[in-house]
Image (tube, rainbow, N blue to C red; front, side, top):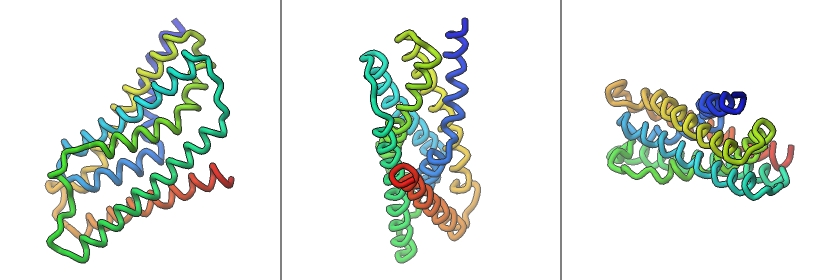
Length: 209
């Protein structure tokens, strides 16, 4: 009964996990490219799928393979998340500067229905957080299959959480919500600055802290 409760509770934990600061600034940067809610929600789904796939992969290797991995490696992976946040923040700022210089350029990328960037960002986040997640599961659940099931249910919860987050963050960029281009550009600037700041903080904490 305790194991079953832990697995069911994993969905709640996964849902809350999606709202961690580094996840939120990444998804906020993604949805600034969308003016359509359905595309922003799809970005959230793909982020969650990428996040879940790497956690399951690492969990399978560690739990099923009975491997022990030094925590220092996961600190390096966390630093990679920081680098990724800095890069996507800088890229979005560069795009914003181009748009500001050329009024005919579109602020949004609704014609691009590909969501591979969202999947990749989610995968990097999942890879970095997988070590702590797997260790937590192994201390609570000793059997292999229930442990992997926990990670899967956790992943489903994180997908749902990121869909909600994507929907909320996309509202200020919806054409139905506002037509104020300058305000939207300010919000993009803030989102990009947060990515760069938090990314730098994560790099410092994991490599120099």
